[in-house]
Image (tube, rainbow, N blue to C red; front, side, top):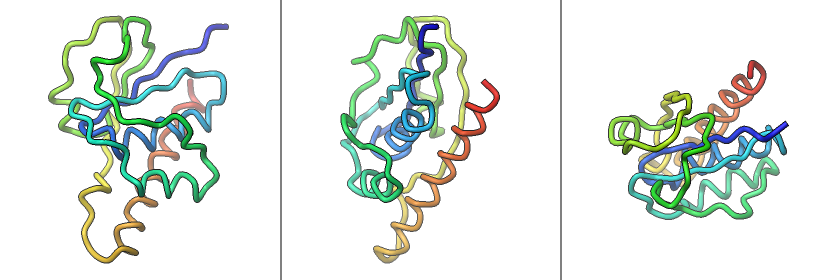
Length: 138
């Protein structure tokens, strides 16, 4: 059975989509080909990598990339994880299901270092929960 393909899209491809890419790959194993991209990539946020490593999720190969770098013609699913990406997503070639899963932007968190890290962990856990729910019914 061929692996299904998912693209997780946000604006900066630095936090939410990176978390989702790594978590989806971790949860789905070889069943899914998982990619992420941004409409205006900014580089992977170091706290995204830290909160993934805290729970034993591999960050190998994660890099910030523009959606135009990826072939979308054979996608099965496109998931937007921020409102801006949902609104500004370019027309992409291919026939695929689109879903919008909005999450808070942890890069916008303010406060002490501990408070900001807590936001990254909360968003990580919310994304993981949503992915597990999706995979359980797909």
